[in-house]
Amino acid sequence: MTIRKILTFPDPALRNVAKEVTEFDSELEKLADDLLETMYENNGIGLAAIQIGVLKRIIVADVSEEKNEPHIFVNPRIKVLDEKKKGGYDEGCLSIPGFYEEVVRPLKVEINFQNLEGKNKSLFPEGLLGVVVQHEADHLDGKLMVDYISSVKRQRIRSKLLKMKK
Ligand code: GNR
Ligand code: NI
Image 1 (cartoon, rainbow, N blue to C red):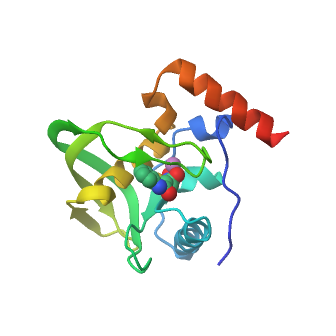
Image 2 (cartoon, rainbow, N blue to C red):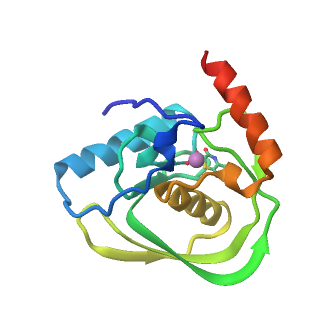
């Protein structure tokens, strides 16, 4: 397993749209392992492959206290079941280090996905996991948490992160 480098906003690579996974092979397994290890190493509760520069539609998450409930979702598709929006979760993003913003998202979603063997699965994520899978699915379409906040705030975050990189 390898800890991979996480790209940070405003890296244009984070704006790509990831491609559907079609090969369920050992390379995909290795990628899932690396994603989990990189997520745990950085104390994250979710990670999308695009954040380590891999344009494949695969995300991982673990919202458990003990960090022993890893989820791997290949080709995830989010279905909104209840349009009622729920804010209140301050979201963070490993690609936007140091910034936390409340994002209003649908409360009830279903996630349809494939596992590492390519088998179709679905899950009705509750609470924080529901928020995280929506956050990760956004990444796969080049969308970031900061897209939900005002452009003034977004610009401020952008310049702070650019200065930190220098
Ligand atoms: O570690 C993370 N925490 C988090 C908190 C609230 C809502 C979403 C997240 S995901 C984030 C890791 C990350 O950047 N995933 O893309
Ligand atoms: Ni993120």
